[in-house]
Amino acid sequence: MKKLLFSLLAILATVTVASARDKVSRDVSDLPKEAQVTLTRHFPKTGVSHIKIEKHTFGGTEYDVILVNGTEVEFDSDGKWTEIDCGHEAVPSELILKPIRDYVAKNYKGQKIVKISVERSKYEIELSNGRELEFNRAGEFLRIDD
Image (cartoon, rainbow, N blue to C red; front, side):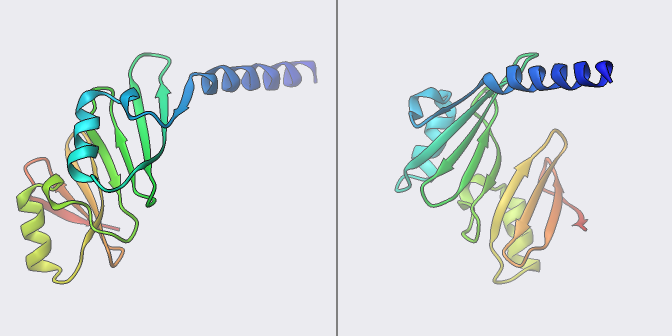
């Protein structure tokens, strides 16, 4: 019983220390320059509600920006976006590779890209009808993500 209690306390202490590294801000200047430019250029009329800054134990920082209209934009430590979720609104087209935009326009007429994320080897998008598609880093269609 003592071992279980000690283990639970150790886990609680670890979680507390890890979460203490997170910071919440409303100051856009806390973001890397590239992230600031992305917000200014692509979301000029939408203010920032708050920014969650997550410093990872083994290095690196992630920035989760929530805009006043509910749009969520995640940035890596260099200020490059890694995910954009616009809810029911379209992701700004300039942020989407042209081959992806063209594929969606041709094969899913009338649908908007409402969410996009970029990973090491692919892009994942979500359309306004809920369908999720995957593309490689060159923007070539890979598959429908079920």
